[in-house]
Length: 209
Image 1 (cartoon, helix red, strand yellow):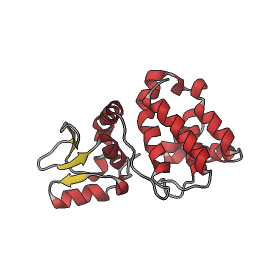
Image 2: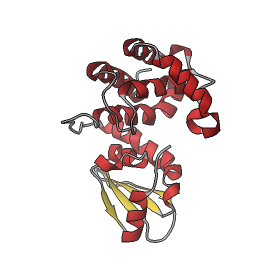
Image 3: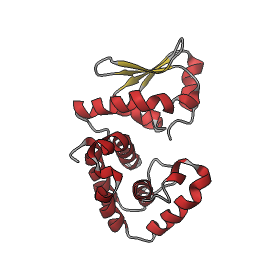
Image 4: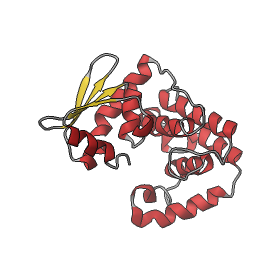
């Protein structure tokens, strides 16, 4: 499991223990402990995970989350580090489903702390996040209802997320584009061009999952 997804998992776990369970995140009113619990429910609970995406099933998610909440953060983090008994133990599946999940949530913790600074990712890591943005972004921008093209600031590559004339063009590093597409654009270093009303519509849309 020597992958970007695995590295982000480990970095998130280290940071969670470093700053403590009550530290804020970019996920609304969730604390660090709440976020760790979310990740465990998503990965380990057949009862709780469906309710993350299906509101009608959220009762199961709540019950499982409440059970996890009774445990110490250190124990929860230890479980999160060890996905051996879950689907995330399968390397290709882990890379496909967890690269965005753990990168975004790691940044959710980092960027919510006072004095945070941007980090520099490797070319390979940015390339992986470009794939995430190019594939997942098609569904993520749907709520905005406007044509969207993304452009890499480092090499000029482009990808169309939603077809149409006069698209909004989002230009930046893949890592920042991913953060925006997952609804965390308020802190991103991005450039937007295109019809003004469409740019505003995209920025105000509820993006993410």
